[in-house]
Amino acid sequence: MTLYSTAIIKQFDWQSKTTIETTAMACMFHDIGKTLLPKDLATLRPQDMNPEQLAMYNKHPELGIQVVDSCRTINNSVKQIILQHHESYDGKGFPFGRKGNKILTLANIVCLADDFVHIMIDDKLQPIEALRKILVDKERVKRYNSILIEKFINVFVDPEKIRKETHLPGNSRMVNQKKVS
Ligand SMILES: [Fe+2]
Image 1 (cartoon, rainbow, N blue to C red):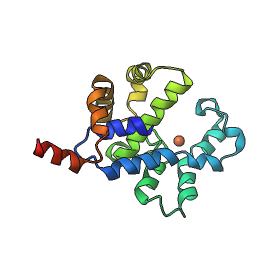
Image 2: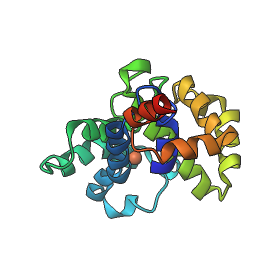
Image 3: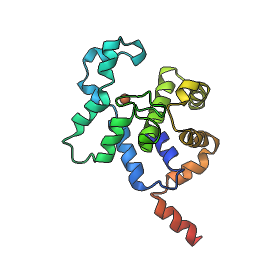
């Protein structure tokens, strides 16, 4: 998740070391709220849950905030991504049903990377096949800002360029290097 989230973020002018680190931290802890869910839910996929189980599962972003609340190393930006990582661009996500630009861009990036990784694991697909599965699913693709989809496709179209940029520590350093050359 961190790898793919970072590859998306690196293509934006607003990217910085802080946004990368914030997102990496959020990727690490995004599902920590699941530790407070009943054990029998751990082995179930959301699509296999009954309505009662699904209602409990849908609370895991808010439970995540409770878990990390007292942890000083996890700042508010990370907490907001944890809270919003299942919000959907079309307003059909949870826990709040936020829509469009009411959702943090970094949270929508983590949502996309999370879904992508789940597709690869659950369906045993190669990355390019998982990307194709997202793109051909009209309902799924509405979950993400279309700009993020465009950037995500770029990860596969020109991975070498993004790989090189990903090794640079931050935006300011990149600008300085360009000026020197
Ligand atoms: Fe989650």
